[in-house]
Amino acid sequence: MKIIHVAEYASGGVATYLKNTIDFQLKDKQVSSVILLNSKSNSEEINFISHKFIHKTYKYHRSIQGIFRLLKVRSEIDKFTPDVVHFHSSFSGIIRLTYLIKPAKYKVVYCPHGWSFIQQNKGPIRKKIYEFIERCLARKTDAIINISKSEQEEAIKHNLPSSKLHLIYNSISSERKEYAVRTPFTDKKRKKLLFIGRFDAAKGLSFLLDNGKLKENGIELVVIGASVLQDQNLKYDDRNIRFLGWVDNEYIGSYMMHCDAVIVPSMWEGFGLVALEAMRAHKMVIASNVGGLPELIIDKKNGLLFKKGSAKSLNERLNEFAGMSDSAINIMGERGYDLFRQKYNRLKLNEKLLKIYSEK
Image 1 (cartoon, rainbow, N blue to C red):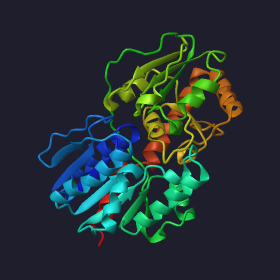
Image 2 (image 1 turned 60 degrees about the vertical axis):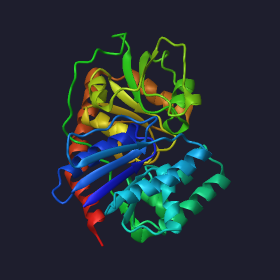
Image 3 (image 1 turned 90 degrees about the vertical axis):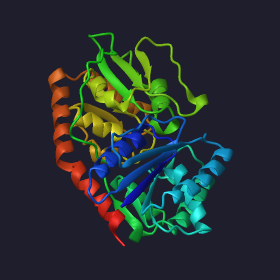
Image 4 (image 1 turned 180 degrees about the vertical axis):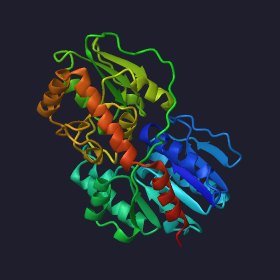
């Protein structure tokens, strides 16, 4: 089986998904080769030491011209004569428009990683347009992968074909490498909070920085990430906040070891892979109650949930976190790790994906 993964920007959660999925597929005997196609810009380095792996990049920036460039990627895909093509995110999924004119001779699989028609920063007319496009493109898609129960429910609610919908939770390896990285936190007396993600409206960092009473609650925040768009870089003159920029995903777990908790203040979210990574690292999570996050974080058991977009709810949780003892924080972290081991088994979830690839 020859598999092609196509992504727009291979960064953040999509990059983590690709690394874990491709790593598993390269080890499977029924897979002859795995090809990854993604934008050269705003993407993490993804490489595997395997004769079965091929990595190609294309020039692309998110714009009208960029969309036309994406459509041309179809010819690159066809040159490989794949058995399966797996599109990741709604932007790379635009390539499926070409199948309305020239049908695919291979299986087409699509994972939105968060439906575009539920994005909170889009108006009702634009959401309806996105919904219409997704329904049209679903006609030329063999299987649609939803990475959380909430995402699956939204797909059904917006009339995508239920026969093509499959729920496969995101997963990551239970194994993680640890590196000797210096702590990014500077004040031992303060609670240490870590944010990881890209700077855009979806991930909620601006909301956290504009509304979170960090200093008042004795909390130091470290931010790992950057913008994928040039006009969205953030700068805050605050000694309680430190920006590290992008960090290679391989080192994320090592940075997590220095924090007390990880915060995921998303405004919308397909799944919340950062939260799962935190659970693997035995860390409690403070998160908004959107998308798949409430499926990962059980309030007051392995973390704290706050109402999306509510400054009052956010600060109540930050205040609660600030008052917690080290032992209480550690207990939540251990509960999260137990849930990670029980529910998010990478082997079973990846086997399910390969089964979908193979089905006629």
